[in-house]
Structure formats: structure tokens, C-alpha cells
Amino acid sequence: MISFYRVAMIISQISLTSYTRRNRRDVMRLVQDNYRMHVHLDWSTLDEWLEDPNVALLLAWQGRDLMGALAAAAPVNDATWLQLISIRDDADAHVVLAELWSP
Image (cartoon, rainbow, N blue to C red; front, top):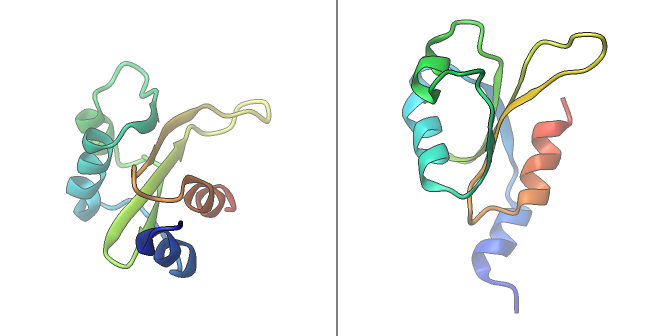
């Protein structure tokens, strides 16, 4: 049986925004409170990394809830390092990642 929350997640639209300083608390909470993540911030803490004005971090929202985040380094020779991927534990990872990956 599919839970109501899962059905709501699939039906509800995901909106994407770029990271801004006002999203700091949401991103910190997402990374600290959830298990589905990859973090490779080049010897920086998340706190330090978020201070960089050149951080390219894409956020996936469902209403006011941050469902996921994805960041990649600038491409070098047509390849890039994924620096941060975090998906909320109760989110449908396939839906959220598909939205984050599309741009």
C-alpha cells in the first residue's frame, strides 16, 4: 500500500531555485538530518563551503520544504565533480533527482 505522503510527493510539483544565503539553514538541516547524501567539498566544511559566493547549488522544493540539493564543480575537459547531493529521507529520490539533474 502506498502511503498518502508518497502519493502527495509524486503529484506535487517540485520547484528549483539556486542557493542563496537565506537558504543556508535549510541546506544545513537537509545535510545534517538525512542519510541519502554525497558530500565532497574539497577539504572544506559545509559551513565554510556555503560561504563561497561562487557556490553553484541547485535546490529542489516542494512548497516550503527543501527536498533535495545538488552541486557540481565547474566542468574541466567535459567532466565535473559532484560536490554535494542530498535528498530528504522521506522524499521520492527518483523524482527529486530527476528534477535536480534536468538542468
